[in-house]
Image 1 (cartoon, rainbow, N blue to C red):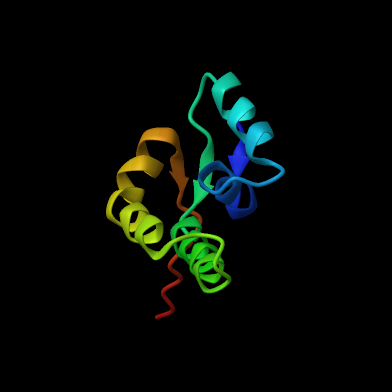
Image 2 (cartoon, one colour; image 1 turned 60 degrees about the horizontal axis):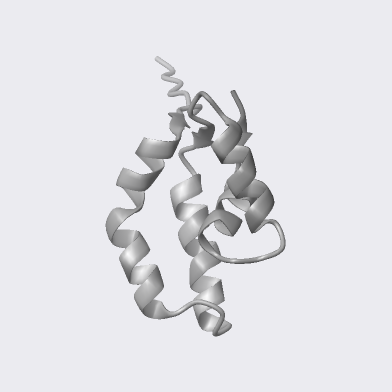
Length: 88
């Protein structure tokens, strides 16, 4: 099982140097990769920056927003790492 952070997920959706490597890595995995809860926010931040730079269309970003949670849950297990500390 592997952990993927946003720097590995962005190339999966946006063509760049690491895209082929990430795709091959995901295809070889028998288990779902683990991701952080923060990936969704970080991914949209990275993609929004690419929209502002003209590298990704707004339509691509909008389409991804509509189906991202379903996509991420199908390809990954989400790592819930935040703890709630209650002090009495």
